[in-house]
Image 1 (spheres, rainbow, N blue to C red):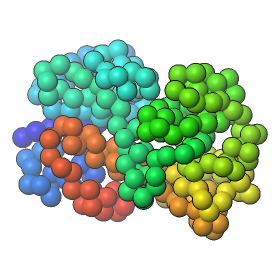
Image 2: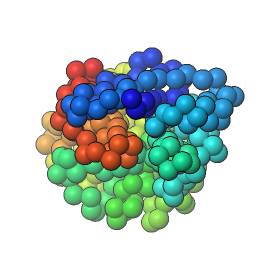
Image 3: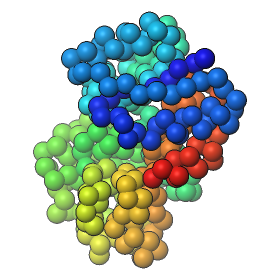
Image 4: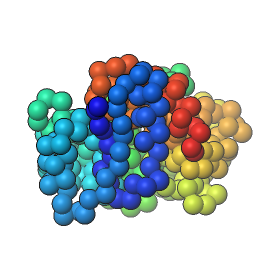
Length: 265
């Protein structure tokens, strides 16, 4: 039996187990997905122990995504983003990857959003970094807006062709944008939105990385003006799909995995 899993803290409410186990069942794989919550100071020992036990791969979540860079061989994208969310033991070494980036681009592609033109990323934290690099690598001109302007400028300095801005510039930035990504937690705990409602327009594709609630105020307002809307469940789905395909070599049963995810969010 193959064993895959998630390492982080807390992990008890993670949606990854049902997402992956639905795929194993659909494909008739003898595999399980389990969760681990090591103490922060034991991360390296935990990962080495997982490899020694024959675990085939691990997802990595808060608070270990940055620290995992130091205990694996990260690929170029994970190194640029500065975070690892997938560890692969298949080569005999521990390699690190970031599937949040491809999760974003595949979520947009699933909704027939052309990855061309201008993109605005709201937030310069972990999700914002993944979004900015992913969209820039697709050839989009990326503007990063953040509450702390210095963080937006710092991230923009790392991303080819990107520019950094404060939140007070969002209305102007969105006027000619093709894609906007909310990479903050705004809308998760309250009925707030991270961009001015008046700045939304029908030519936008709006992806909200928040998936609880599935329909945030941002998505409701965007839908009301005719924009294309993509909830955070799609990004969550496709980052899991990318990890599954990397670990197993199988084409993921996306519809089955999506149904399992939608039953939980």
